[in-house]
Length: 405
Image (cartoon, rainbow, N blue to C red; front, top):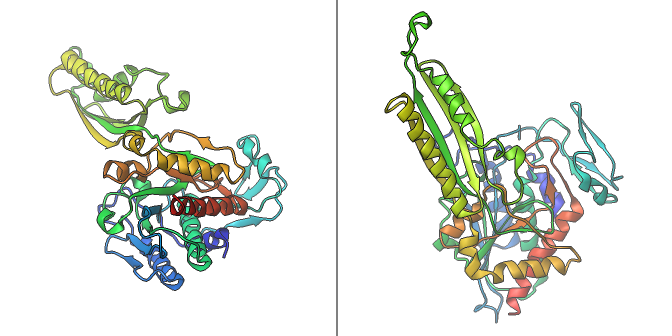
């Protein structure tokens, strides 16, 4: 079975996670795909395939005779889809021999070359899109499909390989996918998440990240008698926003450039809240950004009085390059295998987070590979069957490369 055929089977299963939930997994519907994958893995011959109580799917393909001393390689993808757009009642559309031009999706949405110049390079391929009403779910059901297809090829092809460790995790889209993965049971020496963009992509740098929330307490008095008495909490929130550098926002940055991203602001005269996510690839610059926020807290309290503002900073993840750098053979092997597909290696920093970052800091070096997909998290999401085939070939080559070392 080709990977895209599996993808079409998986995307119709509703697995959207819920960032407001306090359960693990955040939505019970993720078990629907988890149990399906466990059964499919068992049918392929992965005898220890299992789903645990937290919706982590895991299984292992034993090393072939003579390869028992080779590295155990992990491959990981996630079950959930992003809550940014509906993942229910997904209707994938297949465009055979795609023309390379604009595609009318429905619901007034157009997949256009003006927005996505790479589309012309997909001409002649089998393009898979949404119908314009939901996301597709290739993030990360494409990664799941590619790992499953790689497993099928390794098992049925009878090719020499070391131990292969497979895991599918819940709740990656809300930042919790790697937290409860049992690394001892997983048993990999290193791993790859298959959760990126184009098929020639490898990512092993990501943002250092934190969430920062200013809680503001004002003083509410009658506006007719407010002089030198009122502290308008909503205006203080606006003042805080104005104290940050206007050019350091997502709309004005790219590559490794960091930012302060205003995600939420609300309030009234008496109480207000303003929330940011803070990002930077450089650890020193990231720490400097946090110090800037602390300085703003101090300045506002000096101006309006103690306890006017309370800043809460919650670290989210750190740049995985610090943990991968001592194991760069993982990256170099993947680059070699991508190049052997006749592809130019796309070495890009992640302008976001990845399960690989958490896993790397938990002791499992874990860069991220592409899936062949584009425009994740919304109705313009798309992928090609040929791109997915290339990813399967890259995964198989990685396994073979370590079997031959």
